[in-house]
Image 1 (tube, rainbow, N blue to C red):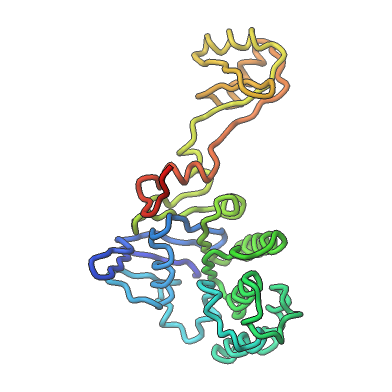
Image 2: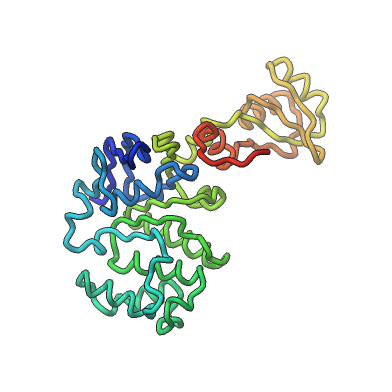
Length: 303
């Protein structure tokens, strides 16, 4: 089983508690977005999971085992934490060859991931000549090297151009569809909303949400319908009898709070009122996220 299990995980640095009794699972077969303000504990949690830091208490395991117990870690877990940490004097190919040799991975796999990441043409170049986006692709190639069942990616779209963003999005969804566990930390709400099936949200080191994308947004949205009709006067009267207000919006449209499009459509159909447009409005992921984390942001600019 490739699931990630976090149980009562706590990490203290002196008097600062960076991670505070976290408990959640990251399951295979879906992309899990890992969200939270700066300083929320996301990177610390990933480091604890990879054995790069030692927990004050609690456990972080993969398939029931700590990462440090694996004799072939790259075959089990692929991670992208800091693509800038790659030795600048090595070529891209040599960097991957070193990783492959250390984990008993066939040399042919190096060429495969170079192609997969779109940097095969730069395989002989030294990493110090790479742009941020190319380093990011090399870091992703390294994470894929052992064909692992678990992927941990911290800000994977950082520095990528639009083509690269589409590539990594499709890659992650494809890996999840194969039954792998994919945990992606990001500050880009627009990307997370198109990518993730599930969300884990931290604030000040504590778990704020562990839920599906749809449930997360719905829980922080007030039902609202936008519509166009050729008979707003009659529709207003029908809605008023049902306890709703028809409010003029922009572009010749109208809005109604507290109702769903299906309900409104039934009311209009009963009265024979023509509807030219009818759709539900929901909060965006960004709006829902800001609503949840407003009281847990460590760093915020004044307005």
